[in-house]
Length: 283
Image 1 (cartoon, one colour):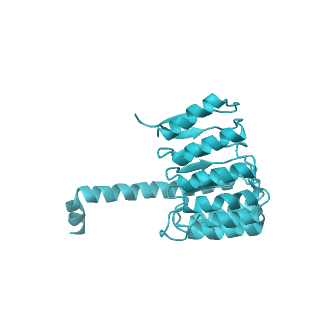
Image 2 (cartoon, helix red, strand yellow):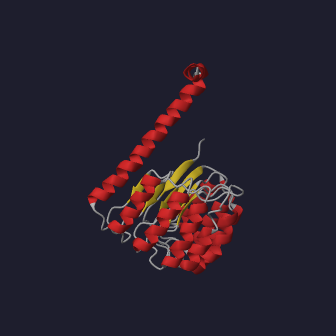
Image 3 (spheres, helix red, strand yellow):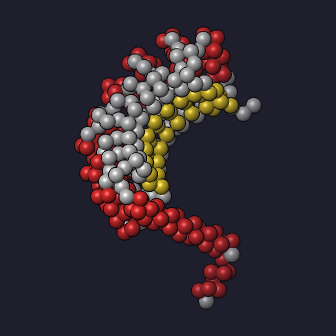
């Protein structure tokens, strides 16, 4: 039987329900486990973590909205992730993690062989937490790193922390999606991010919704998209003080780049299927 999903939201979980979840994890019959916003006892949280540790099928683990609510739970989750080898996506959005909690979790995250997507939005992080996250964005392909990173709504991070992240993004060999929405970034940080995007060979999606940007930021981003080859295909700028005209110009340029890439890909495919066409054209 193919692994399925267990998705429960906002409920108080009984001991019997926890036993069923743990049994499914141990039997490798769960690919996605989402307990978003659920209430469960300390003991039951420990049982779930042990089930996660033993599972070889679990690919997505969603503990959003306050489930990882104290340092003891952070430690238990970290222990589970040190043993688990299958989790690819970990969602902890809305957990009171803080930099101290992330410091406990980070060793397990940094050695996990499969983790490619991490959501630490609204986790009360500061600059120290961002420094740890930069270590999950290796500058070369020598070790695996994150492909998707969400850091929405972490207002405790300063421009120094975001600057450090921008440098890591610029040199990351794998990051494709970066969500920074609803952080008070401002134009200065947006300028740093524009340089990072121009340098990155992999970043395709950047979400800057509601980050305190103005037309100054938009003009910098427009210049970047217009003048530098970039992998970027989606740039979200809504809920900022940016004119609709500038937003549309950026969107049009990104769409043009995507169309050109698709045309090139079709031409390469055609040449591979019919090499004589290329020869005839050259002749």
